[in-house]
Amino acid sequence: MSRREEKRAEREDRLAEQRSRAALAARRSGEDGDGGDARSGGRSGGRSGANGGTRERPGPHGGAGQAGGDRAGGRDPDGARDTSGRRSARSARGDGAPARPRELYVPPRGWHGAGGGRVGYLDPPTMWRATTVQACGMWPFAAGSGSPMTGVPLGQHLFTGATVCGDPLNWFTRARYISNPSLFMLGMPGLGKSTLVNRMLIGLAATGVVPLVLGDLKPDYADTVRALGGQVISIGRGRGGINVLDPGAMGEAAVRIGGEAGEVLKAETHGRVLNMVAALITIVRGRPMDDHEQSVLSAVLHHLRERTSPGRAPLLPDLLRVLTEGPDRVRAVTLDRGNETRYRDAVDPLHRSLLGILDGPLGDTFTSETSTRIDPNAPAVCIDISGIGEADTQLTAAAMLAAWSDGLGTVAASHALADAGLAPRRWFFTVLDELWRPLRAASGIVDRIDALTRLNRSLGLGDAKITHTLKDAEALGTDADRAKARGFVERAGMVVCAGLPRTEMEELGKVVGLSQREIELVSSWSSPPGWGMTGEHEEPPGRGRFLIKVGGRPGIPIKVAITDAERRLHNTNTRWTTDEEAVEQAAARAARDVARAAGQTGPGGWSA
Image (cartoon, rainbow, N blue to C red; front, side):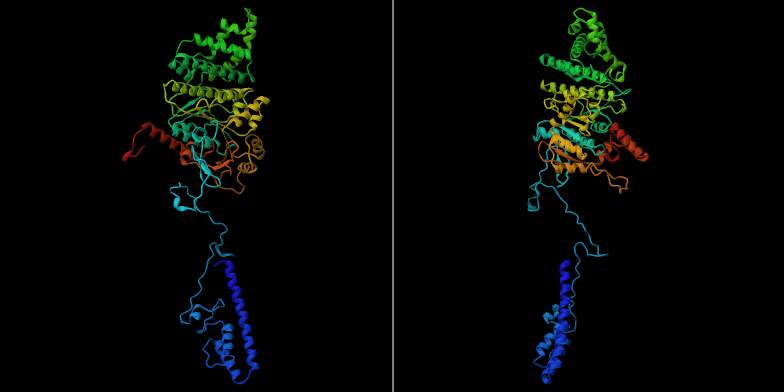
């Protein structure tokens, strides 16, 4: 019985009582006006009716008196009052059985009023996911979902709860959702951007794809790569360096392949080394190289390659030596015409820039042999540059570019060997995190990044570029650089947004195409927790929430919940952990390292 029915029953009780009083008053009035037997009969009938007894004798008012008595008294023949104002079930049956009390009804949400236990909200029913074969008997209670199910499981749809899967490689190769296997991610700091990419990295590694983290700045991915059995290379002062003139895996593959294909790969190696040295010079100068200087640098590299013995890679000091000597091949591109002064005027600016690399902030990292080469057969690779200080912007940008050049060279070598039938075909997934740092290092550096990443589709390479806002591109020095940086977003197959301010979302909407509802949704994720949150583990409302956009399709809002294993491997706030937590984490890490080194089983056969 609902509250409305209860109120209606109460109204009926009041109306029945009023009718009873009116009938009693009418009966008393009739007794005073009638006489003799009629009055006696009426009185007797009325009294018997009022008392609920049997009628002793008929009279002209007996029936009316009986009915009036039943209405007035509202009692059954045994004198038991019917609280509802109606005849009880026993009175209707006339079987003399005791009256059954009315059952107490409690509303589903509790009674209104103080102490009634009223509940204002009911938990939604649990949602389960199943195939049509499993859920066929549940019709019509089963509902379809439009969430994509191809790729790495990312999380749940924010509104439907359905599982959402996706990554640049699977959406390009299998689902054909995108035409370019690339991802561009934007979002405010601390909302889980690297956590989502870390999940993609783990999922793709399980399918045989090789993750390449080319420049881990925090580090965010080193522990994950170690857990996958991959290779972690440290770069920085006193940690390790990269020889940008080393052809690396591409040079080894060219020798192994041989023939015309090997010569083509050698030419590609030459171009990659030239671009890398030009990038270092651009960082030191703060502006791009002149065209004739690139011609001189190319001639110097050709001369070094021809004069260097096999198995040994030239170094940056060797470039200075060649410029000082001035061989004929180099002098020919300077148009010196036998004039020493013209030659020196042509090569001195390049000479000074190379000296700035060797004797400046980049020298310790790029003047010696490569400390550790990338293993082409490793299941995952991470180049850790977290040892470089935040203030060393030039060294950070140079280390990231050198890592990208070396990593993408390894990718090209792997595909060249596969084309020649000398190695199995492998796919790669690169992570370019904190993209804003190399973009701001020097004018023209965006050209180098564009040259390194534009041809990923033909290289069998998926990539994820991560930054904070589009304003990172607006901070570049020239309009051309800003346009090229915005092109990173325009060419991306997938654009993933974490929490961003409304003005930023409106600017992004001009490039990607966002509805007003999507702009409001993502903008709401950039808000901090409320002032009333006093617990220890409150998170911003937008942490773990992302909007996936593909072309003009409606965005897919998801919620990512990380597992305990991911939480242990990926913690970007390690500097803010308490001493007790740090000790526990160090002990757990040491135990894992010991178990991995031992590779044995403990008592009872359990794995150590």
